[in-house]
Image (tube, helix red, strand yellow):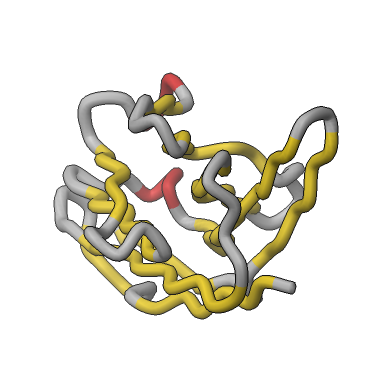
Length: 119
């Protein structure tokens, strides 16, 4: 079992920055993905950014060039540096971990942290 603890959400002005952190406790497989999703009111949850255990990262188009995902040295932490924030970035942000072994996938979610960007 994996538990995720998020921090760093809050209120920012447009153009400002926030940094989200997520610490995973429990067993993280050697092959895994750690990332961030977000869900705005009335919208579906969407992938924001993900980093694979091999180091490659992917971003949704709307945040490319503004957000950076990274992993800590301990490999059980993931960060999301959010710069040049826009009001449309307002959402609840969820940390996600996927453990992978062969064809099996195990998904874990954090409880979410609110990010509000004012114009």
